[in-house]
Image 1 (cartoon, rainbow, N blue to C red):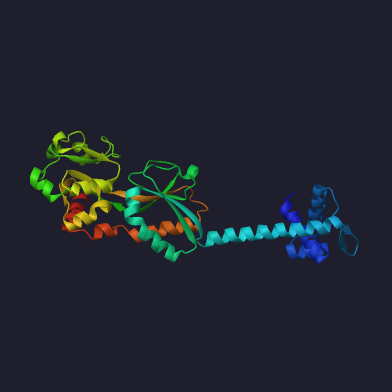
Image 2: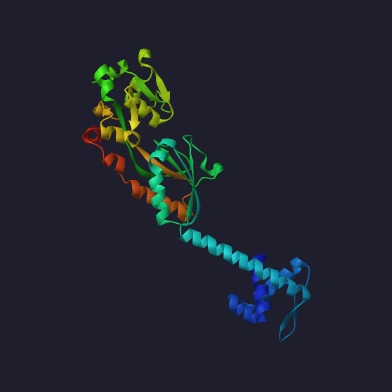
Length: 314
C-alpha cells in the first residue's frame, strides 16, 4: 500500500462524502478508492468511516485522523512545490570550493554580478588549494585549474588559463635575459610548490633544482606572493596571467622566452551529477562561462608582449 495515496483517498472521501465523488476528483475508480481506504484502516487497525448505501460518515477516530492527514498532505504538497520551484528557478544555498589565488583576485566581481541576476541564490564560498571531495564534503561546485584526471565527476570548461615565464626588468638587467631553456639554469627560480618537477611545464623542468644559492631560493604555495617577490627583482617566476597580468601591463614584469610558453590549461567547474542538476548549479556555471569567456579579461588587457606569447603557443 502506498500510504500517501491511501491518505489522499481517505481525505477526499471524508471531504466529499462519497467514494464516487472522491474517485472523480482523484481520477481513479471508486473500487480503487474503496480499496485504499480499507487498506489504510487495516494498517491503522481502526475504522475511519461508517459506510451506508447512501453516504459515508466519519468515526471519532476518522475525525481526528482526517485533520492530521490533511496537514501532512498539505506539507508534502508544499514541499514538492518548493522543490519544483527550486529546480525551475535558481534559488537556495550554493556551496563552492575555489583555489585561493584565483578566488581572491577574480571571484568577488563575478559573485556580485551573479547575485545581482540571481538574488535568491545564497553562496557559501570556501577557498582551498587542495582538491576537495565534492560529494563527501557537500560542495555543489569545485573550481579547478589544470589538466583534470579521469573521474566520475563532471567537468565544464569555463575559460583558458595561460602561463608565462617572467621576471622584473631590474633582475634581467643585472643577471641577463635568458635566450634559451638551457640558459635558465643560471637563474634564480621562484617556484610554485604545487608544480611537480617531472610533470610541470617545460620551463619549470629546466628551472627546478638549478637555482643559485647566492641569489636566495624561494618556493611557495601562493602564486600571488611569488609574483610580488619577482616584481622586487629576486628571480624568474612561471605564473598564470590571471595573477601577474597587472604587473605585466604596468611593466613591472617582462615576459621571457615567449617561444617556450607552456600550452594553455583551463579553469573548470567540477560537479557531481549531470542528471537532476539543480538550477542554481546550472545557472552559476553558465554565468561564469559567459563572464570569463574564451579570452578572459585579464588577458584581453595585456600589452603586446603577451600577444607574442599567444602567437608562439597557439
